Length: 134
Image 1 (tube, rainbow, N blue to C red):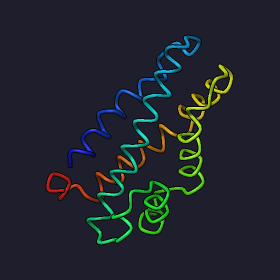
Image 2 (cartoon, helix red, strand yellow; image 1 turned 180 degrees about the horizontal axis):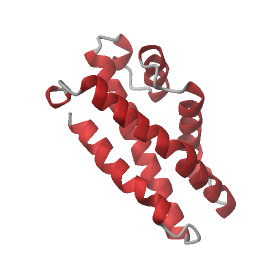
Image 3 (cartoon, one colour; image 1 turned 90 degrees about the vertical axis):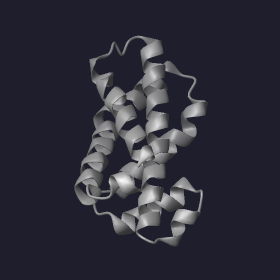
C-alpha cells in the first residue's frame, strides 16, 4: 500500500527528531510539520484498512470518524492519545508562542512518535500478507 509506504518513510525521518537540537526554532518547526504529515498519513492508512475490513465509515473524509471507528476495530489504538493528536493537529496553525511549540514537540517525542511506531508494527504484523495488494 503506497500510503503505508509513505507513512513508514515519513516516520523514519520523524523518528530522528530525538537527535536534533531542540533549541533551534527551525528544527522545532520542522518536527511539528513532520508530525502534521505523519498524522495525516496515519488516519489515511487507517481509512484504507477500514475499507479493506468492509467498514462503511471508510467512505467518510473525516479523520475523527475514521479514528473513532478504528478504535472499535483495532485494540492497539489508544483513544485518549489519538484524540490528543487530533486536537494538536487542529491547533497547530494557532501556535505562535515558542513555549507552546516546544511543549508540542515534547508530546511528539514522548507520546506521538512511539504511538506511530506501535501502529506501524501492529499493521505490519496484522496485514503483512496483503499490504502490497492494498
